Length: 219
Image 1 (cartoon, rainbow, N blue to C red):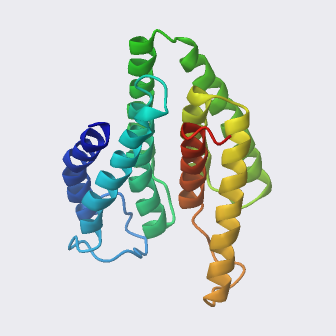
Image 2 (cartoon, helix red, strand yellow):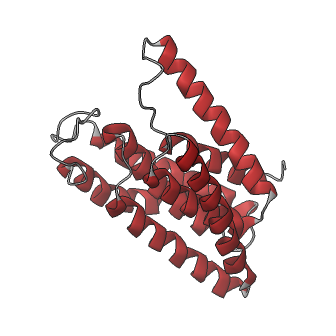
């Protein structure tokens, strides 16, 4: 039932997401869109992706304490849109990050209230601060953008809700490993070493890997 409920929620959320992606309002005039035109053919994958990730979130209900799968679902569903926009325009716009962060925070508050675990919010705040500070440092010394830093804040919040610092370390390792794999794949595909690599998808995937490993109690 939780898997079906998660998938159903994903489908319900998918159609507004598909409509929004089809309009492409997150794009600027100077953006070079990479995922197709605004006719919606590429964006048609959104319903399937959102239903899938929300179904996965529902599957974690047997492992995640209480209603924590709602937080996982909110993160993964928004992560689909974040990855999509970053792959499309190589940016993570605030109009994507801010509503997503509010939904994740609201889901965390609901879960904390239902379970009577107010300390979850403290863990989330600490995780957001730690992960955000780390990626801000990487942005200063490297080539990450502020959109990646804001994404790290949301990711750190979710990781902090479920436990830290080990989840943060696991997510960071998974993120760097995924980013390295993507970079190698781009080089093999003929891209130059100076070509921009969207870091949003590796960051979301690394966080998801850490959450799923924790849900399966493999950490």
